[in-house]
Length: 155
Picture 1 (tube, rainbow, N blue to C red):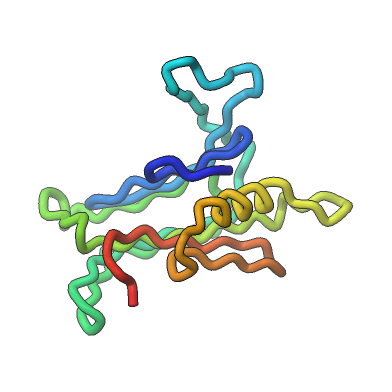
Picture 2 (picture 1 turned 180 degrees about the vertical axis):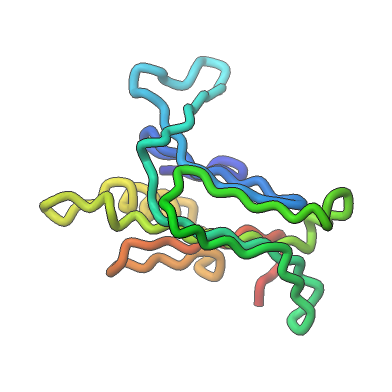
């Protein structure tokens, strides 16, 4: 997987991010026969077969002692796409203050040999991008990834 703009892209899988009055992340796939076109455009498809436990949180960060919860969503069902929305924030979203946090549990995709290609590809892509560790937590034992999107300094 790789990250392009606000998107984590892999060998067929993608995690997207879209904050505002709401936010969402999703897992998408691209069949191997559909290579990126010569203009650099890429197309991925919703892949409802790639469900997994996910959590999604969106906050306004006005300072270390003033953080507003826009929403917190921890569904009990597995997701290929997770979204949250708070209608009280329509038209007043300040993207410079918003913090989106997502948790994706890849553990179900570990094969009988203990290999988890989805988790490993995402981990490799994150390391290749040299993302600041304060924005990503990789739980190697549980194969769970926590990612924070924020334009400011979280600490």
